Structure formats: C-alpha cells, structure tokens
Length: 190
Image (tube, rainbow, N blue to C red; front, side, top):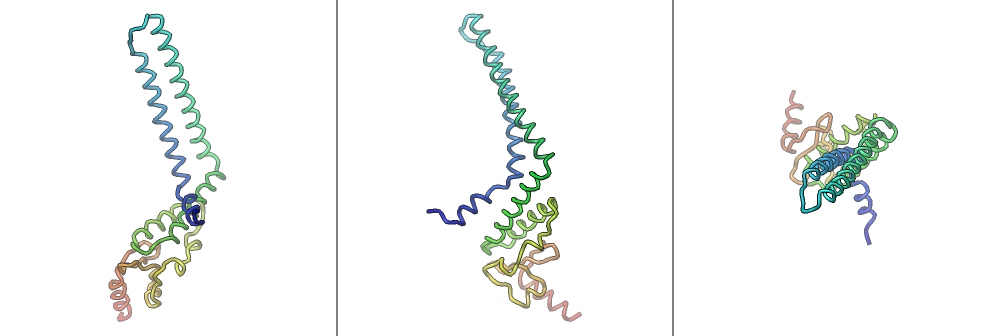
C-alpha cells in the first residue's frame, strides 16, 4: 500500500505552470505535423483510379486539416487562458511554490547545491505571486544534520554531508565549513 508521502510526491511532482506551457508547445508541434501530413497526402499516387485517388486524397486532407484546426483551437484557448486568467495562473504558481517547499523540506542533505537551486526556483515563483520565501522556509526544520550554533550565527542555513554550507543573504552562496570558520575568524579579528 502506498504511503502518504508517495501520494504527496506524485501530486507535487509536476510543476503545473511549466506543464501547461510545454503542452501548448507540444500542441503547436502536432498542429504543424498534421498540416505537413495534409500536404504530403496531397502528393501521394497509388494504383487507384483517378476518381478513387481524388476522393481518397480529399477525405484524408480534410480530416488531417480538421484535426490540425482542433489542436490549434485548444492551443489558442490554453494560451489565452493561462495568460489572461490571473486567478488561475496565481493558483497554479502558488501550487508550484508549495510543491517546491515540499521538495526543499524532503532534501536528503547530500548536496547543498540542490537545495540552493530549489530555493532559487522557489524565490522566482514567489516573486511572481507576491510571497516572501523567507516566510515559507524554516531552516531549523530543514536538514537532518543540524547546523552547529556557531555556524548558524554566520549565518549558515543548511549543511550537507560533505561539509558544504548554504549561506548568503539570498541563500545563494555555497562555502565549505572550513571556509566559513576562516571567514568567521577573520571577521572577529577586525
């Protein structure tokens, strides 16, 4: 039986905003392919009577072009909907932000660069929807490997298994614990 966390990972495993954009691009590609198919069908020649061949070509060209038009209509609708409905876009972006928070809190502590990248992605989402990532992340609950108190004052927000620390005003610097301690020592001597 699947665990609750597996359901959460499946639910939060897709960034909806990006998925919608990808789907629009995919629909555009299918639209172009179907229109090209329509053109190619027009150049076919088989051992059919001229009347059968003409009827065959007309029917398949019409079907393929109709499909392309339907896909174009879907793409246009989705493109318009995502660009014009601020409420829906906001909800999608908000959901993606919470998905990213879930990913951050599930961080296994192996590489702080992953955490840095995820926090950057969260910050970009938060900028779009007017949230502050600092209000959403509690670094004390973040890592399985607690940050020593002296390093937390630097400030170090997270520490990975190899001794690399996430620091910086925008959670955007990675330093080894030795570099952090050296910098702390030089700052205390000034």
